[in-house]
Image (cartoon, rainbow, N blue to C red; front, side):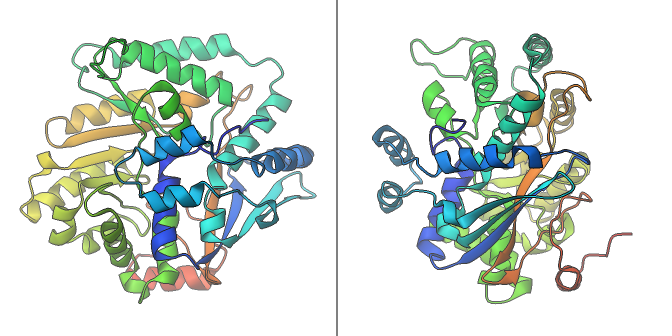
Length: 406
């Protein structure tokens, strides 16, 4: 059994789910799976994936897991009570092999009852694929690569650089994920001053994975994902105001907590048009997830200065396909000019050898409809969107004044 706990997912699934419970309990959604690697044959493993999903749907939250969630200051007691009764329902998810060797995975049903599928299902697809195609994983090479990454982070002048793990959805396996996290905690340290806490400069800030945050005593990290702002296209009063509506509802729910805004659902230019003085002051910062990160950071710092907000009081989070080397470059460019955070995913949790012997899967599950209406994102990186309704995409570009791709 690959997933043994419903906490084995990213924190932002719970923070968004709480908003859904309180603000949009009747919303109906559809998600679809996509593997961006050309030619990857997942169809032979469809039945195995189904069996793992069936096992996932048998899980319930345990008392210790609920207590962990209840201890977080931004999680409300009625939401934890709801989770105490919650189970994922297999009737909402369908896995279908295709004749070309690929698979379709679709999830349809109430948002409140389907939102927790995404991360564990992606982790299942990864682990099923790799345990069938990598009979002898090169863990020695993976450990050597991890050693090299840690050595880079421990170089002179980088003691204040902190990284976090964002790699649950594309990890090689659950066991390898835990090994990587234990190595990072032991060798980079968490900055925890309590007796028995690991030594080190405290360069490991935490993980998006709630289960391992609980097991290892580190900070769980996360706020919102694209699906939240996409759903607001269907749930808000007017499409042009959907981004503003999403931020306002978030602030209504969390009252200043979890104040990191996601910036790339409509591209950076549309984000900055909506992220006015009110939001600049209200939110603690923003997260980058597509487009050139250096350009994004400079534009955001300039935007803060233009609105007479000190950028040094704000946090820029970088999380788009980061490597340790790219993280260091970004740190060197922006250090001292703002607060910084870095979430590294596949580069930490699925880097065991050179392709083609081992190539991580670029798998995603994206929301494509909400309340029977198309929803989409128009990111700053080509290929990151996922919507097959060209008329809706054209309308979205028109509404948010986004040029069509060349």
